[in-house]
Length: 426
Image: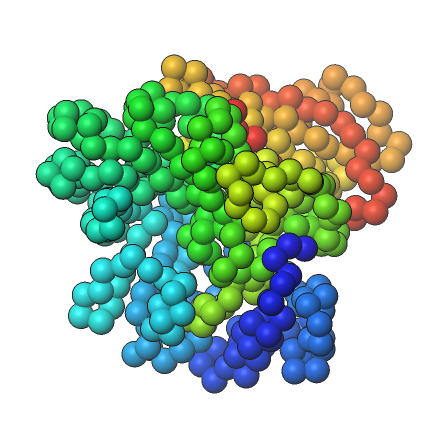
């Protein structure tokens, strides 16, 4: 676990707030089901391990207002995912969240701010901040955003990598921005070395500062200029002002040793609109053992390795859902229940290429053979739904996906059922 210092009292306050809440019993029901009472069972920071882990699936399984822990009149901001990977997730921020400086940089209209994950923020190093929020992911506002950036001669742009790529097409019409723009801050998406290299071509001479965050949390980690200038660097300075982070084994839920890879789990301090407690983000990370950054920033470096998900991953614009793969695997009675689907995403001439490696386990007494692999491949081609309208055979014909490679492996005895989708990006 990292960020333990001075965290106990903050987490205790959050746990009591969630457990005794009069507006939502979401966490109270979860805690009681797990046999956890924060009033009596949380005596030290190590007791955080007694709290049940929270997944995005659980958040999406309830009515959005079940996640509202304050009076409706005290809601200042409703944040949401884009919905491009399935049902939208809505989370609430209260006035108290803003007072505690956990939610900043938003425009308030008539006491309410609706923010989207698709936004552009223009930043002046002189101290002024100019913001242009793109409501409901309205890409038609991008020409106006580019014009605004040029007229203000901004020093920095803060946005998602995807939106930065699209925005660059409109900035070409304003040569003045090439002189003023010094920094591009990226948020909301994991940036691979290949994607950063592509961004650098679009923004020559601009320092690209990566921030590690997602819609559900404040910025978890960020890069200094020294890290930003290293090609292929995916290490970050871990920030601890707003959350405590744990790194766990995704199979067992137990904390990994320093330096080992694991899934990052966060608990946000001071988020009272919708408290997120031991929330599984779904990314594989590690703490870089013994390494200090020359910039002098205190604390360890966080290495981000890639995305692991239990429900779906998005690659090449397609949503690969675990449940659809399960339907295919469960029909084949010679297979055990466990599988690992490794999805490798790369880009060739700016077009996505998806390669899938599927690890499966045969039941006892069943021998590996070419016939079995061909039967599995046939089922996958004809029945694996990779979008609302397309099956695997359709996307193979489009040239985006390659044929699935099938491996038969023996999963550890300790793993009863393992069903993972793991995204690897070049």
